[in-house]
Length: 383
Image (cartoon, helix red, strand yellow):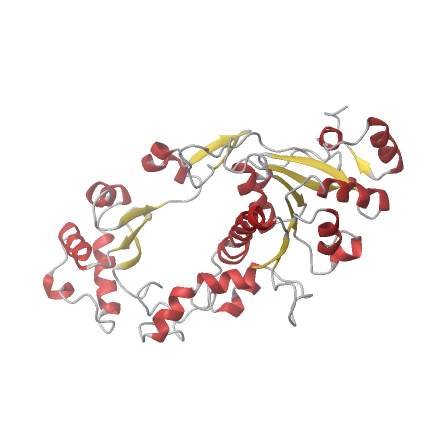
């Protein structure tokens, strides 16, 4: 029973940050009902981690009866997640004004890349585009080389899904006091910009050269904050920023005072990086782990996502779990009294249509008529 037990979330099916947000809410105990398209019923169970803990209702939102079915569900929900381009829900007849009229307490969370307004609102885009105009992508990569996409972690997930969840939780707290719902405009470009807050401060203080890559404290420019290849071709990461941690790095790695006495002189960083790289190539990753892991050097081996779940620290904390044969991150953060949990691997499209609608007060005869008319579709599981 997670902290959101008792809340109901309707998630219009989408990709990326919106399903991620729904997954987090489901992990925290909310009943998350994914609204799939009626035409997707009959498809097999995909190994999509974001589906975990969710139910699925399949509706034809191009049918007025399907739209009315959704609006009746809105009356029984606390949150609706809209992953579509601005204006699409309005065209379908399920926009925020309509939903708030049916349920004045509903939280209508809109997840887009460019936001609900502005010159780019109607343009297509992906994570790489959203982080491009915030300065985030420009800052990532090696000196003299092109920017490197940081997977889709900064725009879609951190700047999108996490931002939306943050907004939903804040809105639910406010609604508990006011009794009124509201619309959340969660834009990945806004979230990515927020994630860059510290570097704006650094630049203002003269501590960051925004025109350069691999030239600053945290972008790989500093020799004591970077990754290094080992004798076996594997990599380690070092983050020995503070003086006491740097002193321990020097001790553990056997760095000479002649070359490494001065830590914070950027003019020396390139040659210091070459010399420390040569040191790290003298031992394997496992040997460096034995020497440094668990110390205050600020050290960790660089693991791929297949090897990461087997790391002893991750095993001890049960950072990863297996659901339906798929290894995946466990719910986070951790609650002492109302722990989050993954209840199941998730439903295939339409698997819960009839069961969910019956729970929401629809009569069986209504469901039969809606099914015959094509407004709803259900899988084989439910009567």
